[in-house]
Image 1 (tube, rainbow, N blue to C red):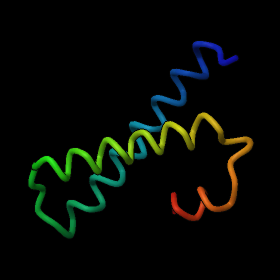
Image 2: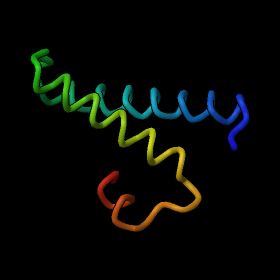
Image 3: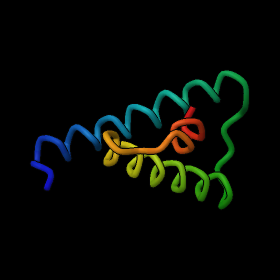
Length: 67
């Protein structure tokens, strides 16, 4: 079971990761919001939450996908 502090830390790490990726991609591409980009960001956010919550027992495949 996770404590409140761990949950908050995981959420902050996911938000920071998504912010960094967004800033990185904005240097190369224009940001256009449509249904596909929103769906991709949601899927990326869910994957990051899964990755953060299982950081101690994640497999190498998920790590390579994340990188």
